[in-house]
Length: 318
Image (cartoon, rainbow, N blue to C red):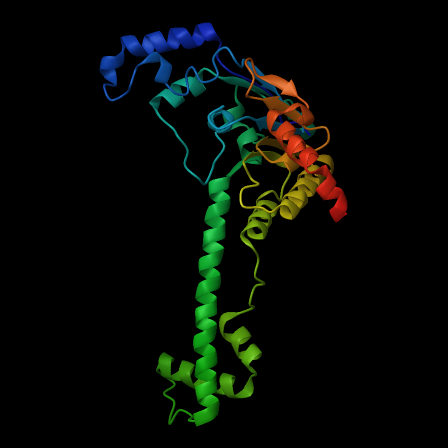
C-alpha cells in the first residue's frame, strides 16, 4: 500500500526568493543567522532534489549530513505527524516546510480524499502515520533497563524478607482492621508463609519479564509501535541491533508491507535493510539525488571489498 505517493520540495528559484525575503526582513528576527549558506534547512537539498516518489518500502541512503533525517523531519512536519523525540525545528524550518507539498492516495477508503480539506477529514494521513527514531528506541531501552533494575532490587529485598520470616517465623501480634498498614502486614505474612519464593514474588510484584538485549528490546518496541496499517517513517531503526536482530527487523518490515497495508520510509545505513527486495533506494550521496540498487552503493562496495579480501578465511570457516 502507498499512502504517500510523492513529496515535493521547493525549487531552486523558490528557495532563493524565500531566502532573499528572509534576509530583507531580518530586523524582525534578529537572533537568526541569515547567511545564505547556513539557513538550514534551506540550501541543504538545493540543486539536488525536487521530489521523492514513494513505494511500499522507500529507503533514504547517505552519509552523515546528507539530509536523510532532515527529509524525514520535513515530511513529518508537513503531514503534521505526531512524534515522541524532538527534532531540529526552527523558524526557518517552518518557512521551508510551508513551501513543500505532497500527493496522497487514500482510495482504499472507498471515498474520494479531499486534499484541500484534509486537515478536517477523518481520513487524514496524519492519523495513520507515525515517526519512530533511534532516540525513541534508545529511550525505550533505558526505560526497560531501569524497570528491570528496580524489579530486580525489589525481588532481592522480598527474597531476603521471606528468608528472614522463614527463619524467625514471627507472626504479627495483632491486626487492626481499621489500619490499612496493619492489614497489609498481616496479609503479607500469610502470603509469605503459604507461598514458595517464586509464588511470593509473582503475587507481590507480578510476572518477571524475560531479559532481552538492547537490540531485542528495540525490535520489540518497533513491532509494538507498527501494529496497524499506515505510513511509518523510521530514522535509523537498526541502531544497537545485532546482525541477527536486523534480519528479524527486515523480515518484519517485508511482511508488514506485503500483507498488512503498511508503507515505510526509512533512513538507514544498514546493509540488511538496504538489501530488502523491491525497496526503492534514494542515494543522497549523489548530486542530484539518484535512484540506486543496493549493490551500487559506496558503503556496500566497501563491505564487498572487505569480504572479498578475506574470502579464503571465510571459506575455511564454512
